[in-house]
Amino acid sequence: MREAVFAHPVTVGIVAATVAVVLVAGAVIGAMTLAGRGTPELRRELWLRTGSWCLLLPLMMGPVLLGREWVIGAVTLLGLACLREFDRATGLFREPLVAGLVVLGILAANFAALDHWYGFFVALWPLTVGVIVIGTIPRDRPQGYVQRVALGIFAYMLFGAGLAHLSFMANEPGYRPILLMLLTTVALSDVAAFTFGKLIGGPKLLPTTSPNKSIAGAVGSLCVTTLLVATLSFFIFRDTPMAQPHWLLVFGVIVGIGAQAGDLMLSSIKRDIGIKDMGTILPGHGGVLDRFNSLLLVAPAAFHFIQFFVGFGMGQPVRLITGG
Image (cartoon, rainbow, N blue to C red; front, side, top):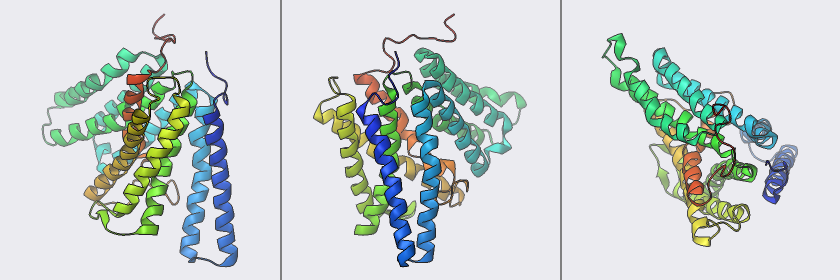
């Protein structure tokens, strides 16, 4: 039995708070513009980022509010969009067979979520890796084998197996507050890191990997994300084995570290191949992968932590499509 869209108070609170933050941000930037505060470049950057969020937030929250199938469809498209940017940046597009196998893997992982077939979902990771490993062997072209296979496996791990955990979460009747919490706290983690870094400054975290990130920003972001996730999770998982202070804080730390690790992982990729952004589709943010990189690690980590204590879709019909 599916819950009504706004049945859970956390869902209402997150949606209302998000709308309020965007409106306040627009008002503040508008006041800065009228008063001539800040440089024109700063104001332009702020307007671009706010405008992008006005586009992103409905695209992020809309499918969650609309229903299970919408979530799975949106996650599938997100995975394919991230793969496209990754292909172009790393040169994987020059190996169409490997790239095609990764696409099939992404589609299969999300189909398993749509079918609510957990056994197939977890089996797809080793099965897809095996297919990618042997896929190009019959072409009798050993040159570059390690690179193309490694890129293919890495891409599937992130954009297929990783992101598809968000799809499988939608099999839980009360999935909305969980997904909204993850989406908003991961986004807030990035904002908090930027804010604390600018306000406090200090030594850089990893100056070669990400020159703009400071230790103060990372610590401040981790504290904010941990406390917010733990607080929201208390209301989401109340009366479950997970609703104990130490487990809620551990969960918050996992999300906080995962969000920053995903960002630093993508920064490492970009520095290695010598580019600034993975794309230009989102003004002020870069590409789709630049914006959603934190979810790549947070999604599977959060899924399996919650799965251990609570589970997803327990008691719900399984194999909805293949079960006959």
